[in-house]
Image (cartoon, rainbow, N blue to C red; front, side, top):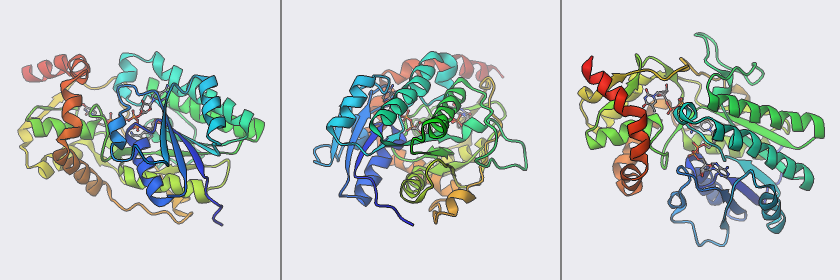
Length: 347
Ligand code: NAD
Ligand code: TYD
């Protein structure tokens, strides 16, 4: 049965990729709701992701860290928050390999602070987790929600710790929580450190596409729109205390994804460069999404449509990514790829 929807949402990380898509989607579908975006505005948090919505009386922004308990508590109290949706996180595996500690600070301790405030004020909390908590998945298996967590990168480990803290609060304190574990999302406003926006923007600029290792790793590339509808479904019809996988249930190799990006943008395959692999690179993610389907949810996009739509968005929205690519991103890019690409050229 559909419950009455929440009215006053605190959306942490609402200036990031998925958070901003969710805020836009939620306000379109639930115009009676009020949304407070709570965001630290790290390099990945960008006010322009919600450029056309600021100024609406239904949306406001608090700039802050989810680890700041006083500010989180005050923001919840002053805005009569009845639901926290926690997107806030450090999110890139490669960044977690270069500098892991901030992943523990935000993803683990930050989530813990949100749980404490939710417990104190009696607020429902929905936590955004990831398929990476399951670790890499052997051929023939699809992760179900009851599978053990076996994370393998600092990012995945911090997300698994947060996921388990959320479940512990449900068990120990009876806190009303739900969790969604999303597959690799693609779509508008994804910071170009992630594979699909990186490859799309590099292809548009005529720069090499750095494919890690043999490129036969498998991912379920799901459109962010379907993640948003999946979260909405759980918020309105999910069972309290439960975990739901959100993806398409279908994977492709990274090489297939790269070909699709190049084909969509009309660019040549010679741009592909195989470079030194990511340490501990998970070979395959794959999730069974039947539990969410049983609530009446269906993804609108298959993975090929999702990747192609994303590539087209970057082609049509240079205003969004060109300032990022020419700014501090350059420093990260050189650190992550200069040696790798030089190595590829010598092969
Ligand atoms: P993102 O990196 O684009 O955005 C993260 C947002 O969190 C940014 O706005 C950033 O400023 C904010 N933030 C970071 N640290 C913060 C802190 N300490 N306090 C407050 N705000 C902080 O990430 P995304 O791709 O939109 O991912 C959102 C969530 O979804 C994350 O929890 C991530 O683990 C999860 N997830 C992502 C994917 C994916 O494919 N991108 C897949 C599954 C799950
Ligand atoms: P990414 O978008 O970083 O997501 P995740 O590692 O969380 O799945 O990467 C998606 C896939 O693309 C993953 O298998 C790693 C690969 N990849 C590359 O081959 N080259 C790159 O430069 C990046 C960023 C990723």
